[in-house]
Length: 450
Picture 1 (cartoon, one colour):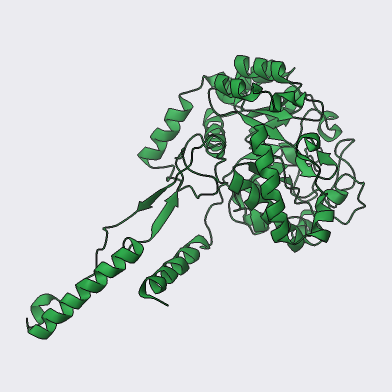
Picture 2 (cartoon, one colour):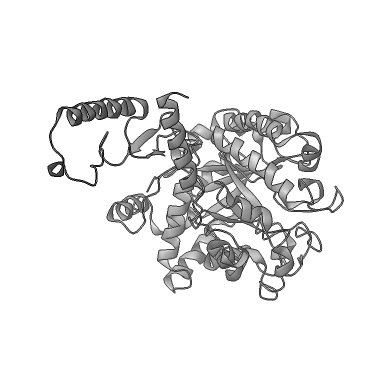
């Protein structure tokens, strides 16, 4: 191996060791749908700087042999600089004009620079618009989307099976993005199999279970690159996938063939391939349904669902989340009753205990998580709607610690925001918590890099 090769190998090994350092807070990579190509390399330290020998120059006689040695040392240092561009480790960073798949060096939020960056972003919004940034709502088509964005500045729209999908191909999204104060999330459920909203536009894909039975993870990664590019070409910025539930239930049950496997390690490998591919093309991903729907007692679309106790989830359902919490994906919380974790009649999607488990990580052996937490649909699933209306559900979710409340229509947006303003005014929803969620969502969307 050449001198350059040896030096580069050593640097690569150091970088790998740093990347795997335990205890780091897991923060999803920013979605780069609005970002231009190009990434900067930031270097720390002086270029080509060398460390003096522990013995000072005064201790050594100045003789020709030493002069020759110093000359040789200078030549080696010059060669090393030419090979590597400097002796100090470099960090690849993504600014708001970076490229998909790069790692953003997030500033310490306690530093003045980070506080100024966040404050500048928050200053774009009125107090009501900040709250609206924490909502993602289903739309019927372009006109519905234009109305809710122009009047309330919601943070995201959801394209469902009922949506007029011509808005994805006729240029409507460009006009919609132009009305948004911050980049608008255009979200979708595109898992493949029976959960596929745009198969008519980008073609079908097998279910997760069939995928794991017929493809290697690397083959799935390549297939997902193609599918991710097709989604991005339609203007989709966030895909509510992959489903990382661990399940052996029959194919046609609520999770069933949406699960890659009943083996959590298999689920991890295929979900990791999916997340990496989508991130590479610039589409955000969301793991679901925390803390695990795969062994639940029923279908949360039709009624309450009870999972096994928390101690049983630890060794099965929570494993993929634990393994992938630093993958760059956001997390969706399910409407699940979890013995040993949730309060009776308070499903996970509005449970402070569940939000804390995910944020802190210690309760299930994972790294802390500082990325966005989404709820599952709050208006069309009986596991939540049998207990409360949409205004109460959205408030409960955000107060509990979710960053983004999802539901499937725009009709209640104004009344939801009216209720949230009251929750802020009376202290149920602290302003500082709202600001933290707005900044967290902004980072996820690639709108700020602090």
